[in-house]
Image 1 (cartoon, chains in turn red, yellow):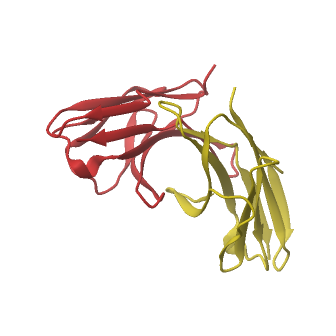
Image 2: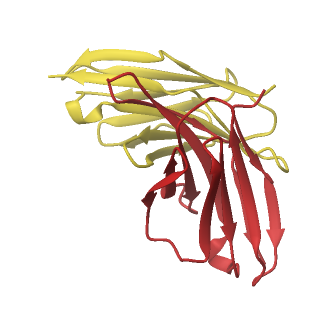
Amino acid sequence: DTAVSQTPKYLVTQMGNDKSIKCEQNLGHDTMYWYKQDSKKFLKIMFSYNNKELIINETVPNRFSPKSPDKAHLNLHINSLELGDSAVYFCASSQVAGGRGYYGYTFGSGTRLTVV
Amino acid sequence: EDKVVQSPLSLVVHEGDTVTLNCSYEVTNFRSLLWYKQEKKAPTFLFMLTSSGIEKKSGRLSSILDKKELFSILNITATQTGDSAIYLCAVDRDNYGQNFVFGPGTRLSVLP
């Protein structure tokens, strides 16, 4: 029933490990995003995919690699985790409504990543 | 099931008007409530509220939380066309694996 679902919701891992966060949306939206929430609650966009194609790739370390097997899924893989990667990561999806350019975003509940 | 409700879902005003956006919530293990302004690339963080009755202000924007009645309001005075955006309310939950619940957003359009 959940519209945008992220797994896992909570992840504690050691430095140097590789981990993945999965995201799935069942809304039929054509665009998906990954955001990182910093300690001050600011949300920074990391990646955006439209119909499986990468359209936004902000300056993030290349240890972060997104993968979109289909337009309903956007996974985030992180190699060689560092302490500074600890944050909440949000997945979101959106769909442009008609020709008005309205972007209705739906967010997942977030994944709290703690690197120790 | 935990939920966050925002009202109105859509609002059209003219420059100079004052608007009040509402966010009500029903969640377990409330930790904090956050307001974001959704812009093209990423939401802009506005406020984080944890205690009742303490108004937070930033320029023409202000927000307050009522933990007894389980709601928050976001006020924007002397609106400008640049205030046009979707305003998101999100509640953070203090429980393993539960994390955030986002409201659907209020779409504000400010006309010249």
